[in-house]
Amino acid sequence: DESVDRATLRVRYRTDETDDGMFFGGLGSNAGYIQGVGDASNDNSSQTGKIIAINPYGGNVGIGTTNPHGKLQIRDTTTGTVGETLTLDTDQTLGGRGTMIRFTGNNRGFVGAEIQGRIDVDSQEKMSLLFVTNNGSATSEAMRITHDGNVGIGTSSPTGAKLQIDSIQSGDIGIQVTQSQAEPGIFIDQNGN
Image (cartoon, rainbow, N blue to C red; front, side, top):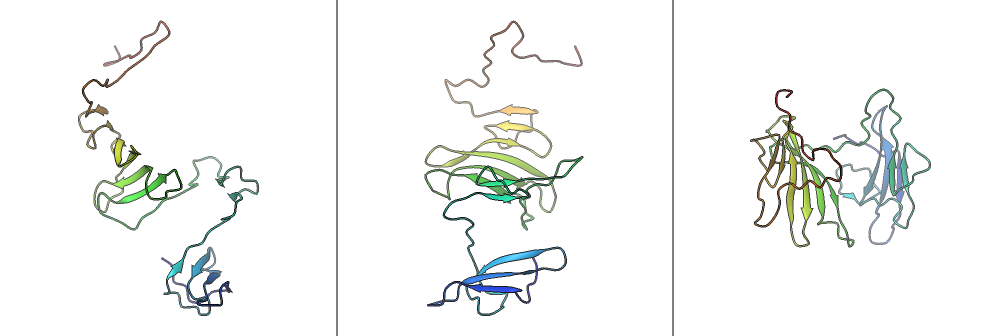
């Protein structure tokens, strides 16, 4: 959290009931900010922020590129390593908290499928990756990759194996392999034999 004393530039775009607007300013030598505000006539940094919409009438947004090919394209020019292109962060420290990416349809922004990064242990960096789906009326966890590398399908606690599949309903198949060539569909190797 940064402290904002004064906005370098204030823009008011309503002058009837309120002075809604935007602040543009600096946060030191390495950062700047854009903030929607409810009262652009003063520099009170404690006032309630407002929503900012980028291109609400159409158009693409590019970060690190002048020719974005999707609604949002982020280009990372880091060489020689994996770039930190997008970071989702939270100030939560307790287990069960975290961040998520949500996918929705029918113009409904509050339900849908999700990919969650969830803290496993209080005040530690151990996190699991959860894949959550929606059957049309409710969301449920479909798969989890734990912080120690186990994968669970139908279970939120895959501790018995590297891949654990639970909650298979009557009449369903746990694993199905369809093979069209003369090679094993599943090969299990134990101790290199």
